Length: 351
Figure 1 (cartoon, rainbow, N blue to C red):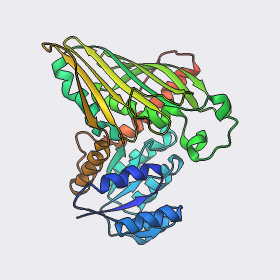
Figure 2 (figure 1 turned 90 degrees about the vertical axis):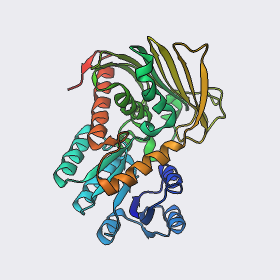
Figure 3 (figure 1 turned 180 degrees about the vertical axis):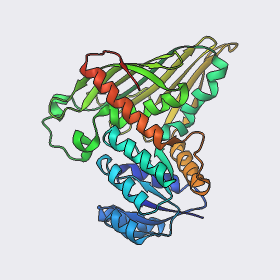
């Protein structure tokens, strides 16, 4: 039986708790949350002990195999370092590792020195739809063109900048940035997983005039393999955004499309949380026409946590897992993309 402690009971923890409900051989022993209502409700659900401060949990709880850090972005660095100092041997930390790459690099180095297992929670590698791209790469042949796009229904920046910030998500100093950090980071990690490392980037960004958060990005990723990937992110002020699916919380449209010599594959996801079916369209050489298949996107959470639970036993990263180093690289690439944006799309090398 693998025992876990969980730090945080915010919106992302809803997905974590969903996953844990579907995994055997795991028990949540302690939960820390400053939100007493949600924290105690989660403890009642799992039969865990409640703490209102994660530092108290780390000081008093020692009988667990791994810890899940699902706190606000600006708390990741402090929580990770505190967990390592407390002797925790396995950590699953939500992205981003830190609100800048300097924090992320420190976490990587500290985890290395302590010899602990560390996984960054990029769940899209475990998504059954996106996995179909990796499965198809050999069959479709030499890649000609790749596009990655995420659009979310959201108020215009001129409106959002005048609206009081309701949570840390809307504060660039606490979140580490805007749409690129919150959502684009997932695709950066996924694209690295599918197509290898990124050599250089070129981006043009638009920013919220009130806070400086990026809300629209038009970029190009130059991969070391020679592939060029178009990447687009945007907040769109329309209420019914989506690729023809049932809408979720105002609208979401996330797509990766790959065109190659012997085939074509396109993945469309209408919900970042995975509560709706996603569509995979593929058309390979020899097929009379395209085939459309639907997958339960919420399997990404189950697959991610099942892999982490297994890694708590073995201290070996799953083939689909993102390491601490992967988390750092994404944070570093984001900073380079913003640097390119400030230079009006000038190509910036990734060291």
